[in-house]
Length: 220
Image 1 (cartoon, rainbow, N blue to C red):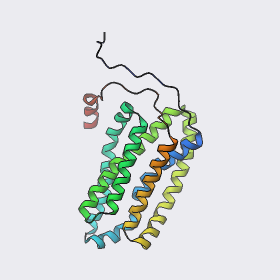
Image 2: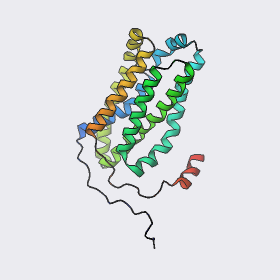
Image 3: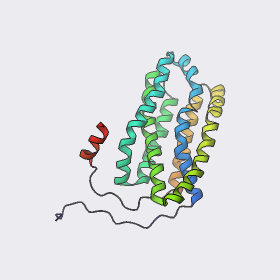
Image 4: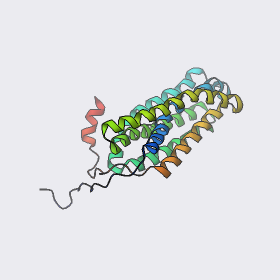
């Protein structure tokens, strides 16, 4: 029998009212940050090597750091989103993403840019992980697949436009232009989530994060 101090499960709340159009828009923006972070940024690589006096191998580290941090951070954001809710994790992740993008655009050295890009990748993981969890929170499998299909259509448009917009920004504003556009994309997504998306998780996991159970999974 659980004692009086044992954690109690939070009561389930009613399902939030989120239209399919709003859900598809939010999902498109969240998932679209991944190609925005990479494809839109690629045209700036040759320019930043010259501007920062760095070899191409060092410039490539700015991509590797983002991808590695993105992969590792996914293992953390998921359990945290189950514990505190989707919305707080999304808002925190998008705020960090935008701040890291601004930091990268203002970086004065390749080393600083690598650090900012790693933070950007870790924050990006929150958006991608929670986006998929939102579909499960709101919809049954068939309906969720339909909404996700529409969102992936929006993702495709973003992925196609990314390199074009990045090349245009790089030609006009130099290597800092694409990173500034990435920051604007993060800020716009933050605003849409803050204004349009309620908390979608109906029951918070009131138990402490099960680190002892997660660590073996992470090791494998």
